[in-house]
Amino acid sequence: MKYLADIGGYGIMIVEVFKKPTKWRIMKTLILKEIDELIYGSLGILIFISFFIGAVVSIQTAMNLTSDFIPKNLIGFATRQSIILEFAPTFCSIIMAGKVGSFITSSIGTMRVTEQIDALEVMGVNALNYLVFPKIIAMMMYPFIIAIAMYVGIFGGWFAGVFGGFITSADFVEGVTMDFIPFHVTYSFIKTFVFAFLLATIPSYHGFYMKGGALEVGKASTTSFVWTSIIIVITNYVLTQLLLT
Amino acid sequence: MIEVNNIHKSFGDAHILKGISTVFETGKTNLIIGQSGSGKTVLLKCLLGLFSPEEGSIVYDGQKYSELSSKDQRNLRQDMGMVFQGSALFDGMTVAGNVMFPLEMFTKLAKSEMEDRVNIVLKRVNLVDADHKYPSEISGGMQKRVAIARAIVMNPQYLFCDEPNSGLDPKTAIIIDNLIKEITEEYNITTVINTHDMNSVMEIGEKIIFLKDGLKEWEGTKHEIFKTDNQAVTSFVYSSELFKKVRQMYLEERN
Image (cartoon, rainbow over all chains, first blue to last red; front, side):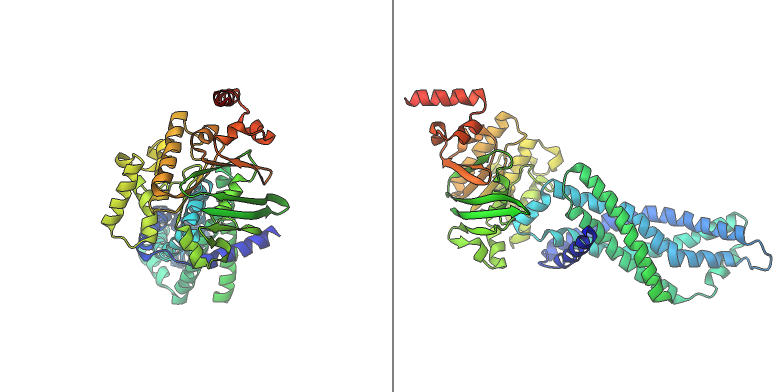
């Protein structure tokens, strides 16, 4: 019953977010601030993780190529496919659920606990529009960092493959460009846009409607991470079924 | 003036306000007192329009809130200033930013005009030098003064304060109480203060409403509270030996 109430509450929140918009002059500043905190602030960790994920995928693929009949360029091919189809959009989104999601929940939750949200409402400000809308717009920039994560991941694969002595640079590049299907990138970016929306709104819901004190802010952040991850994984399955089959 | 007519408010099975009627007068500091759980905060949130009463009405200078369109309700809310118990200042904004916030949201003033208005109200609450500081960099008393400055920057007709001097030392609490009283008279606004603090009652209680179990048990002035025989009021207000002695001295003086 609680889950149904939460789903209903989440839907109502989404509708409210788009009502009674804040002045553009103020909203513009809020969006830029959120882009800085949510997107630019996540760039470093995503580049770091993507590089090493690409490297590991490359090494593991190389270690499994035990037959001489399988061409070495398969390492580049497998790295590209894994990074573009799954690791960059989905794995990075799970990381973002932890980093950005818990930040959103705790910052909005703290505003709730310290009556700052009540202060906005008393003034006649649509607190949901003021707090959540800029986050949604900022997260629409998320596909840009995922594109960078894709490049860095494949570069990490090349680096580990070539400098680990598993493959030559030419073979890796040949594998990366082999049988390339442009729709796979489109599919990946469609997923990323959907995940971006979920990453901005689910943690906001958990922060905005939380009750209690500082301890509950911590609990809400954990719950938010768990639910954002679960919804991302389920959505990933549904979108893959719809778009790739 | 705010007229409260027989308002009822429940949350699930809990009937919090059980038919409260009173008048909060303009230019006076109106205090709501009562034990925890008596319904003070719920009444204040009903006055602010954050809760809708199931029965009864709240009338702001002739405008019945429940009969206003949502646009008029929003406009009326812009005539309300609120000082929260914990100040509720926006952490990411400076003192000046916090005070300027309502002006930026609801007016079309030029930046320089807004800055002038902010300087006037900061000067009024003696905080001119702290304008560039963040809420975490100033004391609790200063935070309360910023909250008062933010509440009055739009020239409100109604000022609501929830426990304005909780967590403050006695000297700072008196400064805040007197500041609210002076502002009420100066701007001729209707001020409603929710408090537990008996010092505030004695200092600035021009009209006092005592709530008990969701009902208005007593109302009167700070002078009348000394003379009342109401058992619920006396056991709450004069629960400390100090206030018992103050009352005794007051009554002896009058006799």
